[in-house]
Image (tube, rainbow, N blue to C red):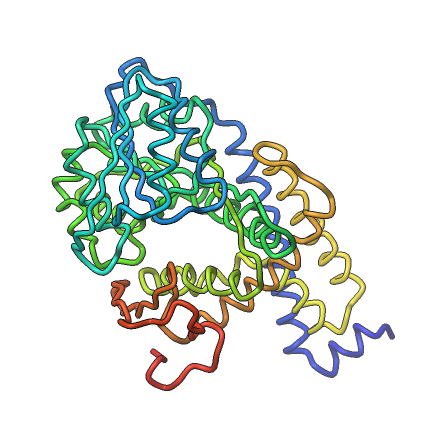
Length: 407
């Protein structure tokens, strides 16, 4: 009698649970591969009726690669577009980057909005509201400050706005690490877990997503949903924009464009703080979706199943296949968008284990740290700033949670 057989006889419930977890991990891994290949087969969407576009870029501070990211928006192969950058304070170092771009591209319409007016608890949304008074065109594209794009970005994204039933157009994003070990782990999380999960959702017909990396919409849609003021207190402002447009009967389009975000976490603390902010925000706006995300952690599921089956030989083979599929999905994505190396892809399983642990932690607590300030996230996903937060204070993400911090 084999070891696996004796374990199954002694612990049948655990053995079957382990088998189920490995099977789930294997099925999801195969599904991600199908979803990625399906997206790769999509032809770029182009349209002749490209109307003038206003690009809104809220800024705060001198982020890594900021100039390169902003400059990529100045070199768009698009008939007519305006760039509006926004900061809260004239002393913000990002102002110097915008002035540099204005000098470098004098023929391009580049405006800078400096306005400290607050319209809610979300400083990014306040910035966007202030910037809107400078927006001249009816087609709007919002993009985070750390996003870098290719010259055909605007033409491929804006092409969908000519369709009257489209509410917003959004893009998936890949991560480019600019630091060492922890930034590479964070980038692997984006490339190996986030993008596949988005593609699987899209393959299964879901459009319940929107990403700050890109949100394109028409001004009339913006006005009909109440403008940025309707989401002024929301931490998941991008998700709420998509939700609001779907609520009025318009659809969300996932563009074939994949943009690039800068990943610069230097420590495990920074990585944990960033991911917990994202995870707790998702839990606030989509609690059932957050719970169902357990099925997307194929590597932790398979390793847990392997342990529960006492390293059954057949389960060991299945687990090995899950690991290989995880590396392959990362390889397929990175061959398109970023440099790839075997050492980087081997970080994938480690990244999955870390994020799975953070996902478990994300079930408790409702406080997150964003730009050196602490916010409490309520059950509706609204952010409430915790006043007088010291810049160097430890986030509750990294310490024991008190009863008052638990939901």
